[in-house]
Length: 173
Image 1: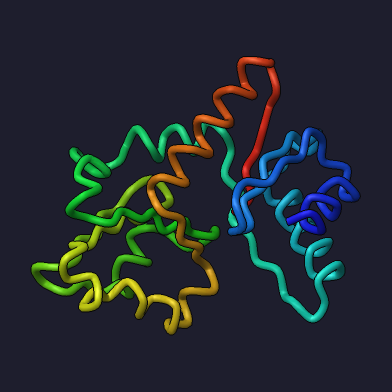
Image 2 (image 1 turned 45 degrees about the vertical axis):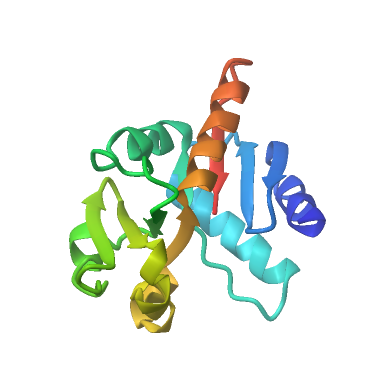
């Protein structure tokens, strides 16, 4: 994560901070064209971490807030019974297209379309039967990244705290 932070700082991002060991980076950027910013960061990450071919999902503060606010009713409310995840989608992949490839196990899994994401829950007692792990074997997975609900909520809280300091932040996962 130290090298990831250094790569982002070398890419002229400001107030760079990483969160846990899963590639989450909070930063502010002068670039307002998010497509250009994604390309720039993917190129920098690929060059820094050769032979890695970087593919990132960039999520603005406003977008992350919308993702949390638009979660299905009750999503995340029973952590003792269910595991909750958010499947972030890399543009141009849409949630309606992605849901066609994401299978669920009846009585175990549930998947819901959200704003540029899929919400996925699975019954803890039957987690070994969940189809979530199957997603990583799909070709479409190259245009996704998965974060658990707790991580999503924590990153939003970190962005909220930074926004109180009038920072315009982005998150890359």
